[in-house]
Length: 101
Image 1 (cartoon, rainbow, N blue to C red):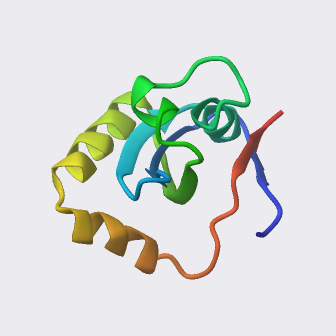
Image 2: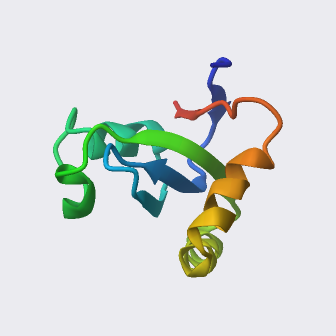
């Protein structure tokens, strides 16, 4: 995967695939920390992914602010599974993870 992009705190919307094949959509300010939580490497994280580890990041995109991130998350959650998986197909190459410094 490409080198992480350095950014200031920025909201992100993300899509995970769980070990059981299910999909999870969420928002965060720190994507790397949140992935570590989803995979049990750090304390925290939702109950949903706790029993479905490991999870894999399929897709993410930045959002202007929390409200925009939550609106995009809600829109993605309404999509059928095939459309969610197509989000990944629309990305040209691997998407670097943001790094907060």
